[in-house]
Amino acid sequence: MSIKEHWEKVFSTKQENEVSWYQPIPEISLKFIEKLNLPKDAKIIDIGGGDSYLIDALLERGYTNLFLLDISEQAILRIKKRLGVKASKVTFVVSDILNFVPPTSFDVWHDRASFHFLTEVEDIKKYKAIVSKAIITKGTLIIGTFSEDGPKKCSGLDIAQYNEASITHLFENDFKKMECVTEDHQTPFDTIQNFIFCSFNKI
Image 1 (cartoon, helix red, strand yellow):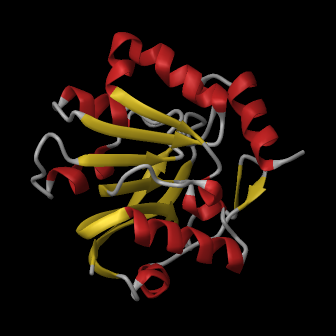
Image 2 (cartoon, helix red, strand yellow; image 1 turned 60 degrees about the horizontal axis):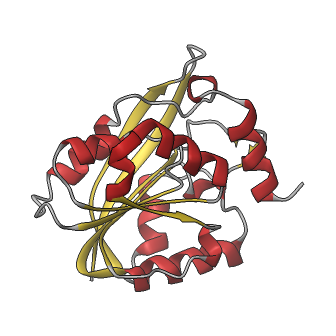
């Protein structure tokens, strides 16, 4: 089964509260974005945001230039249905992140729990190249991944764990670290997953 087939199956067979990453209020992500004091027309993209409520929250706060990318067409259909008429205010992209050709430059690139599925060195290099070109100078990269105290697998797939030093080193050629925090995410199954969230400024 390909990676795309895997995620299409997940989003076709599980409800949003039947997956570990379910989070009705993405508090950490919102705090990071709100600290930036962006204009409401700032271009913000959410990577792998299929079942995330980040886009909902940003729409409620008046942001008008939002993008959401997910590898799963089913995931995109689900969030469009949930948003209803508000979906027309969002640009949706169905793509593997490694094949993504950004249609514009972004003020903010947000990725919660997508990047850590890249475990091969070459795939991580591709991601870094894409994100470095996609963000404007002085723009912001926000990444949330499993920490070294988090799970080693998610949805049956291997993931890469990070700490503040390792993720900072990974992006240091093009980005300057602004802030890192950890979060104990409570899943719908009453288990705890530890994440590390970091924000970076594009040099």
